[in-house]
Length: 52
Image (cartoon, rainbow, N blue to C red):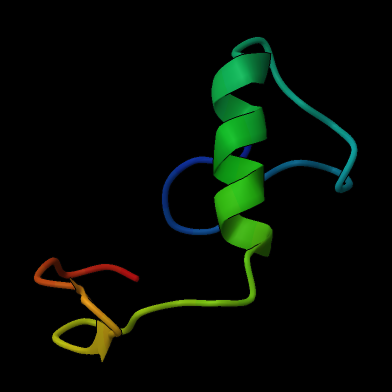
């Protein structure tokens, strides 16, 4: 994909790769302004993982 994983390799924000449904989901996650940092909570939600 062009959007999944650490960072992205898409040439611009409108470009989706061969796995366009997956890329669309990852792009939405990347563009989200609300993040729960590792070990932090947001209301009833807690991030127990190693990523935001």
